[in-house]
Amino acid sequence: MSLTLIVTILIVEDSPSELQLMSYYLTESGYNVILATGAKEALEKALLQKPDVIVTDVVMPGMSGFELCRYLKKNPVTATVPIVICSSKNQEIDRLWAMRQGADAYLTKPYTREQLIRAIRSLVN
Image 1 (spheres, rainbow, N blue to C red):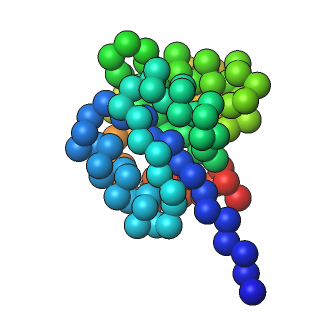
Image 2 (tube, rainbow, N blue to C red):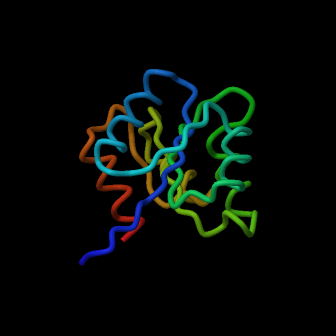
Image 3 (cartoon, rainbow, N blue to C red):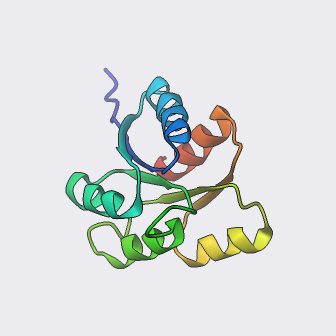
């Protein structure tokens, strides 16, 4: 008998279509998904629901994904939660900056379902 752990992923994305697509990819792949449409909402949900992985956009109103990353990594409750930055910014400097903010992986939009799943699997295994 194999014990399968359900992995919970918090998706932070202000675009409803992106949020829906990502949510679909992840639920279809057997993940439990929590949705947040902004960084402030994501902070609250991350602290309350303690997801296993956080996937966040960079450009969002109010607080950027980079700022969110810094807050999460500074908080003892969320400091060890892996973060995947998912951005349309595809310059090497953006990737380096994301890693400096505490991101564990960086995906560029548009991404494939396989790229998203691979990034998450690399962080939870």
